[in-house]
Length: 206
Image (cartoon, rainbow, N blue to C red; front, side):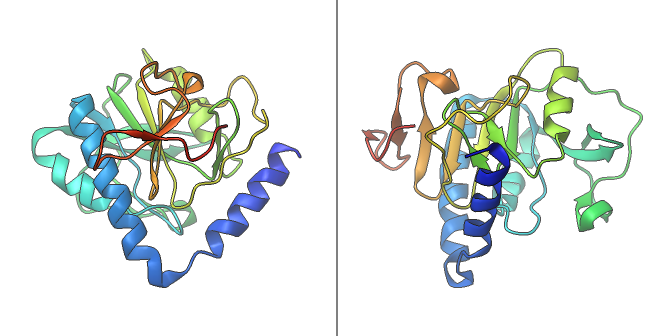
């Protein structure tokens, strides 16, 4: 299977998710994500504004906004730049809502929240195929803690990605939080961690 084949399969699974369970899935993701971010204690956080079947993380954004510096991507040619989260957002390319442009040249964040279509066996991100995050991350002064978010777990047992594909530290789905040695997290290798117990359950391995 190629990366393209796996992307197509994951997209199919996401598009087939039932609307009736959407609120539950988003609620679980926000529960896990908010607990993670409070534990990680980063003050400068890059989020994404949900679009299509991406997990709706707006409750987490609203909860953290008062005491943190939050940023959103603003598309810029084949990549994007970070701009401060300011309202109102404007609907731009592909129907995605983005903040207004800023003259700030932001190159340092503590945490990045990144939507994914799938994840391969090395913990690398499979996105929509445009490579925007892959071009963006090398522009930062240092790699931030990177939390992948996905509405439905879609993980390959194969190594499908290229060396330049972004790798995550944690992988958040409605089922819990995944970390492994390939995600650079030493204390919880190859386990799913559920925020309501703090204990790992071996649901599956990469």
